[in-house]
Amino acid sequence: MSKVKLTNPTRWENLLDDPAFKKQLTEDVLENYVVSQRWYGGKSSTLKYLEISEFFTIAHKGDHFYGLLLEVNFKEAFYQHYFLPLGFVEDKKAAGDGLIAPVQLGEKTGYLVDALYLDSFRKVLFEKIIESHPVEGLGTITFHAGEQLEETEYISSRFLGAEQSNTSIIFNDKHIIKFFRRIYSSTNPDYQICRYLTEHTNFDRSPTYTGSINLNIVKRHDITLALMQKLVPNDGDGWEWMLGELKTVFSTLSRKHIDPNTLPEVQLFSRLKLREVPHEIVDWTGLDLLKRIRTLALRTAQFHVAIGAERNDLKFTADKYNGDYNVWLKNRLLYMFQNRLNTVENNLHKLKDEALELAQELLERKNEVRARFIEFDWHHMKGERIRIHGDYHLGQVLVDGEDFYLLDFEGEPESTIRDRKVKQMPQKDLAGMFRSFHYAIYSTIFEHRDQLGLPIEDLYKAGELLYKYLISIFLDTYLHHVHNNNLNIGYQKEVNFLLQFCLLEKAIYELGYEFNSRPSWAIIPLRGIQSIMNHKQQKV
Image 1 (spheres, rainbow, N blue to C red):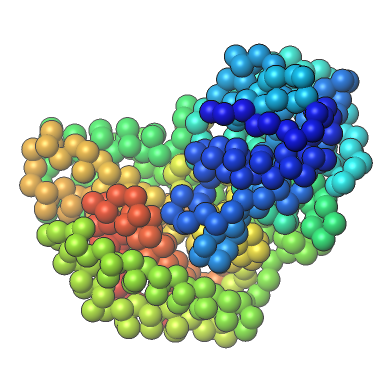
Image 2 (image 1 turned 180 degrees about the vertical axis):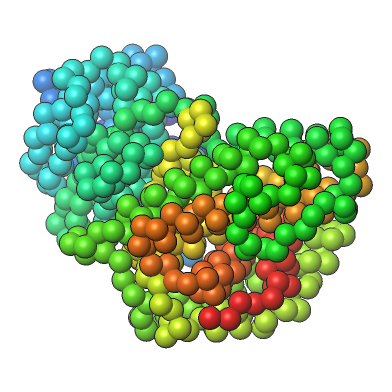
């Protein structure tokens, strides 16, 4: 790692005033650092160039840092923006994992560092949130303290752990601040929804909003840099919890010599109360798992009711289906479907056996799938659209004893920031969670099939049956609560139609990730697509 030499001696406080250094910094240093980070989202694209689109300073009690807004341009003719705070230290050990590059500032030798790795920077940010005073400069940085923030001083901070797209830091062992690395020229939906739930609803099963950092620059509005929430007690996320539960469920299948072919069937999208679940199923799965699914359904329904009840704030008021939404939805889905078809065609050589057969079947039925999307007619929809989670799955809930917290309202990673804020059918969140159930079931089968000692066909049979029972219990609880609390999501035919519609969308969406990351798992969304297409289509 070579040192960056400035053409003229300079001070840290006016570092980026030097054009020659700024050019060297972007071309020789920042580009290498950014592309090596976990939160960099352009790994599958070809970088063209990186530049500093904006920068601002944060000075506090003698400490001085820079906030960089980086624009990464790709040869595929699109760009992304990232937030990188910059600090300077003379001691290499102080830089830790945030070391960017050695640098010579006049007569002073030291290191450029990602400032989030510096305790002094984290202290400055926390104190400014407590003070809630805007910092005027090139842009206005707004530090906001929520009504629930009771802290008066900075004590400590530590990283939560490795993350894929953001950086989260725990402050004073009471609050967690999520720093959004990839940023957008708009408020982040996670900040927007979290703050709304805390300040305007009684929904208490999501982390409480306690503060934020937003930036306003000419021609851009309220770029969300960070969101602070109360740290909630938890036993891990829903995905790990479900895998543990399902391991027991499938082990019981083997231990009790249960033949899946003799278990009572249930129709997809049935509604079942716990007392209506056949005793053979309860004996197999255990009652606790079914009760927890019911609790998760209730929390999901309470979230939708809370966010769909707004009558004044237009960002959250419910909307009817209309022609504009109809056009937006179809264009988006048809584009996504064609993209996935291309992906499947280009990756058939990575598949074998059943996965290959399912992929070929999808290609043969592509017009039938496309017709499902085209047949969406807003004139038939009597329910309402609301703001939703948008990327709802087991990994987006925390387990709290027998209960759950909902979190991470950023929305679907592939979607634009505008699309993530579009009011949509709440069934899309249900479909996301149901597809997550499906993934957890198949992940368990793949991971433990050798220990279970059962034919793979029997495991698949049991998995599909369990999937339908989990959905049936979830739906009964969810629909009972939303209907009793006057959330208009339509009557039964409309609910079922939209569930099928959204499940198909989610399964097709998943194909992109699987073919790019782990083609051997493509069988899961492919099986999901086949199941939905073979299920009798609900008419509205």
